[in-house]
Image (cartoon, rainbow, N blue to C red):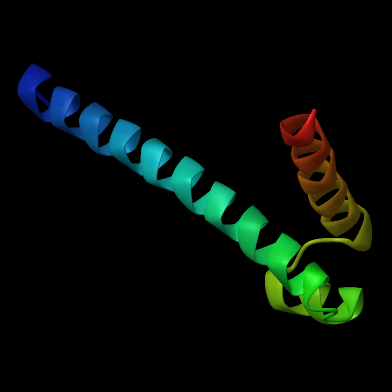
Length: 71
């Protein structure tokens, strides 16, 4: 592995990290929307692989953000 190849691999990794962060935020929005649409929490967990506690935290964080925006 030469320096150029290593730099390319590192850049690909950084790109993947950026995409992952964007997708994580999009998934959180989708989870909050599903909760607002009254999709059962069990179904959200089944679809995402998250635990009920993780889903609750995501939904509550969205509620807290909305409250802070209103203030």
